[in-house]
Length: 292
Image (cartoon, rainbow, N blue to C red; front, side, top):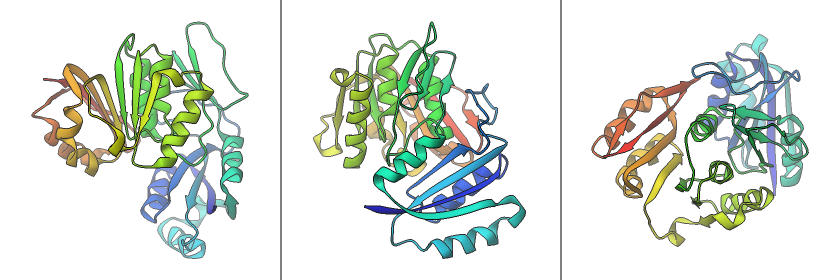
């Protein structure tokens, strides 16, 4: 299968707005890449985790119109803020190679490295997750994923049962096991996400501790930790269903939520969850709390 790949270099201030605009125009995947080989580690809470000059790469299905997308983008943003606009049609494997050319090691909470293959980091007191994302969303470069990885790397997961609801590439499930969780159950509506999760579990030698399911294959159970990095509307619609997956006193982590959506999501979960203060990165937030 082939795809439209569009990339453009912009500033760190414009990059989040441009990424959201690409998504609103139907992109199936959008990611940030370093445009100038400027290493970036996981920042302190509240700091922006993108580069001074950032390449924003969007992937579209073949029925999209790249020229129309370009016209709409240039109408929305000043031309001076958009450099090196590039378009090409890429096959699945070519997209993966293009992505990995720019995907660099990232460190979370001084405990967890997320690295592309052949760039593994060996450092005392840390674990290293290797990931080749392909087309499934979730490499740690997007704030929603980074916020969840930061939470995982900051908490004691020893012998915990984890559910990754909306697993994408499986990065959160794999990270949880590497951080000493007992077992992870990964659920996603996309068969490609299940394949990616199984592949990444095998790559990190944790396949025996990760169970993957499409929703119709998943028999609900109760876990110590539930992670749901999806979008605000499905989080709200499934609030009762998601909370039912937690033991009493279990920990819930929600992401994929824009700041202005936080109040609605909190309201939907308020009967079940005692939330801690929200954590924000760029326009995105993470909510985490304890089941009543």
